[in-house]
Length: 222
Image 1 (cartoon, one colour):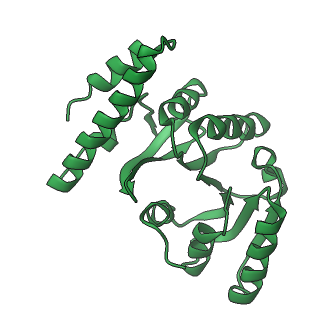
Image 2: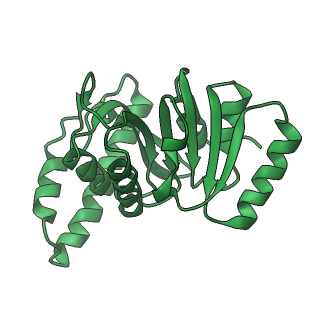
């Protein structure tokens, strides 16, 4: 199947050199399959908690990638068995909200605090919540991208569980606001407007800490 703009961007952000890449909440396993096709990692793991989905993924892997190194895990992403596998790990999580993603990343991090794990994260909403969680655990930023796919905006965060050699994570982003073309500048402007309108609606509902969030987004110089 052809990858959407979002999934293609996520897949392309995975660099070579990992021993294990974990395609979490993998749905139909499209990201992991693309990684297998270009031999991006020594082994690709497919993880989802839905048995029917994982059975279908495994069947397709057996058919199309019989010689490749892969594994299927039908389980809770919060309990990834990273310690069973030696080497360098990249955990890819996409297709869920920022609140749940924050919980999953925190759980994985707490269970493997002595491990240097990289994460590639693309929440469908609430990226601010996710960023706050990453900052609280002193994660480091490798790269971040803002894209639009099917009339929806997505922030993609490539981070590490250690700050060493990486940049600090900004609460509202930094690199995602940089543009080298008119198309990207327009995308950025529309995303800021949509995000501010969202938080202003919450502000009218007397939600806590919204003023600070709005101030942070208003401070972005595009």
